[in-house]
Image 1: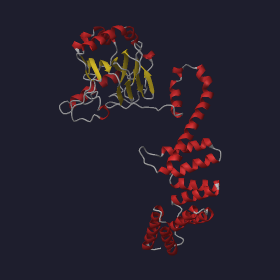
Image 2 (image 1 turned 30 degrees about the vertical axis):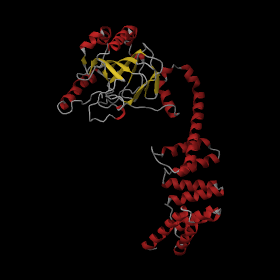
Image 3 (image 1 turned 90 degrees about the vertical axis):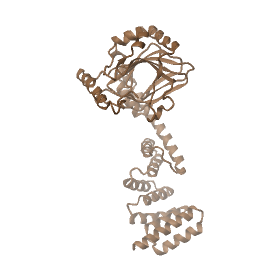
Image 4 (image 1 turned 90 degrees about the horizontal axis):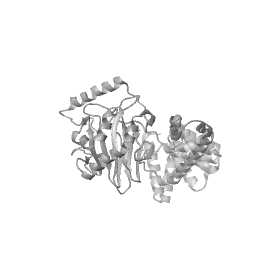
Length: 432
């Protein structure tokens, strides 16, 4: 067939399909008949007539035409997909399975073929295998993809099948693991538990995503064990004194500044509602490595505790220590910190009901006087759903995985980076 004839046949088939879609059945038949008269054995002509026969209930004849079409053009996934549809109508499951495998051999992420393969597995009583295929099908869909309305019901069925399977396998694993869990303490099996929870769909594993300096090889943990920070007990023992100093600052309302303070012209992204807002404010005792003398003098007991703590110390960057005030009905959106070379301590001081904090997949409620340590380069966010402000003391310490040499190199190199950019990019590596 010449190129011109090939073009003519394809045009006729396209016109027939458009007429059929528009409800112009007689015109569609006329165009299809014309194409058949010119090229009765053309794969597209055979396919179009087969679809017409299937719509009129003649699946057996449609099968023969589609088999001829697929043999003539074996790398056309659409032909194999249509053949699988006809074989489903005929109840020929083995043959349908083979046709679907032909589609997936050509296009392994073919959404409809995956959905139909999973349906066929369900029909054959293999619900577990079907759930795996449904999961694969759902993973092929990119975010914000607009899908045909005809797929809405099959996709919802796929989601429910995956959920049922997830629940079943979770129950099975829990039953098998009950003896081990009863034998070993939770903190001794925490890593394996997190891995299983991710596999079972109970949590997502978040990774460190510093906005400035990433030190590879450091442990990525959402919250760190209190046992590694025995010196925090002194802070917790003094929480009444620290709270009193914080409350004094709040009453006087002097020196509190918006924690988010982007300059004009910079993209604020998720910080649009909090930029330059007192809804999230800070009273700094230390800021970017400098002690704020007047503030520290107003809070002598807190300042003395900080002076004895093993704070991160990088000239121009750390330590940073401040009272963090989150106003009523306020939300700090998901974000990550500047470097994983440090860890962040929260000491809750004034915590009304309805205040919670998420790091990665773990959400906790603050408890007054109970400190925790977390990696702020893992995505985190905070809520104050109460009707009054929430107040905590925040400060930073070195990551436990750093050697003495690591710390010395960071102390030297990070200020050098800032110095290099000082005149042209003064905010390089800053908290915001």
